[in-house]
Length: 315
Image 1 (tube, rainbow, N blue to C red):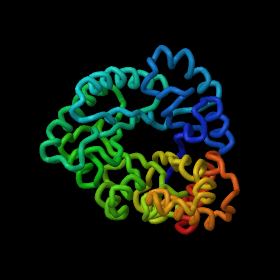
Image 2: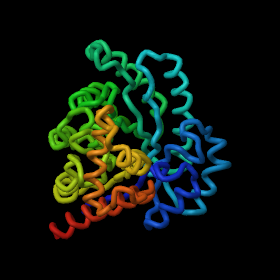
Image 3: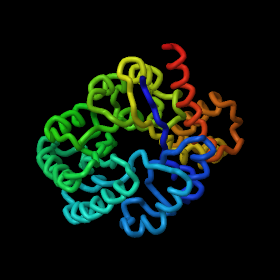
Image 4: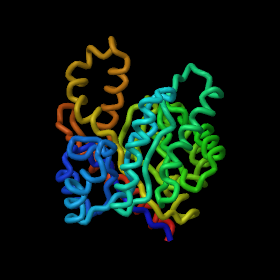
């Protein structure tokens, strides 16, 4: 039987750990995917600092880590100085993983120029990813490669290429539907190509205009994906909420008020168009305030509704 556990990048609501814990408790959940904690990226903590300032509060609240949302690998492919620094950070993150009884660290396959030669990038990407893997070997930690725009592994083809070439039990894939959409990728096609190698899902949806929207309002194919995971694959793992709350919460009223100006800035006009669509779907007036917490709650409730619908339909 499938067992989907819900986690989240709760720093989208607040970078303050106590506020993150409070929201997790409001939802009745117990998992956090740490990214920014008390205003500092999780990768910038030493294990000693984490154990003294962060872990006691998590333990007291009964909060666990689903994965660590690190920026490892999100540096220029040929920036050797940044890479060496990340090797050191990864060593500390592995210790933090052990402290929290967590087995996943999210990572990336390096920033590259889209206009460059991907065949030339490939050997260097693989070499440096294997450098990361040397650090986790001998532990229970698994590195999760997230597909992301403007990195090497931005398409399902390149994600699968990396997976097959590296061929390591501690290298698995995380699936982000919105990031694929923003790269012009068809999500059902990507899912079919990668589903046998994905062990972790980020819940972020995206419109045809490549603007993030609440789950179910975009091209993320979540109902069908979750149905397959529950009915056919007995998925036992995490889905981490990552709605990217900032654009809509911070700009929707401003763009509406200055809508006459958007023709001069096409990207603003695009966002405004999508924001109006969200307003209509959620019954929100143009000048109504919507907080980042509101949007995060939409995402949580939307995911829960999809999971519940799938389970009821397939009892």
